[in-house]
Image 1 (tube, rainbow, N blue to C red):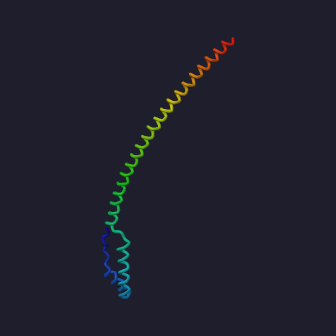
Image 2 (cartoon, helix red, strand yellow; image 1 turned 45 degrees about the horizontal axis):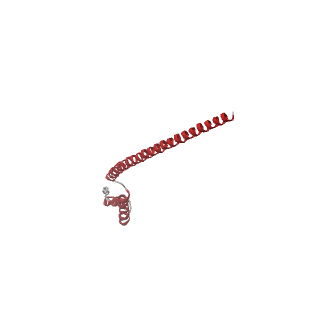
Image 3 (spheres, rainbow, N blue to C red; image 1 turned 180 degrees about the vertical axis):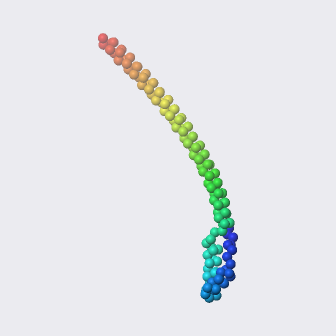
Length: 120
C-alpha cells in the first residue's frame, strides 16, 4: 500500500555533519529518521487507499444491514399473522363459550320459571 516518501538520507546526513555531527552520528540519525518515515507516516496514496477501502466496507455493511432489516420485517410480518390467527381463534372460542353460557342461562331461567309456576 505504501509508496516511500521522498527522503534523501544522504542529504540529511550531510546537513547534520555541517552542524557538527560526526559521520557515524549523522548516518545513524538519517537511518533512524528514514525508518520512522517508512514505518510510521502515511502517504497520500495510503490515505486514498484507506478511504477507498472504507467506502467499500461501508457499502458492504449497508447492503448487509438492508438484508438483515428485510429478514426482520419478514419475521415480524409472519409473527403478526400468527398472532392475528391466534386472536381470531380465541375470539371464536369466546363466542362459543358465551353462546353456551347464554343457552345455559336461558334453560336455567326457563326451569326456574317453570318451577315457580309449578309452586303457584
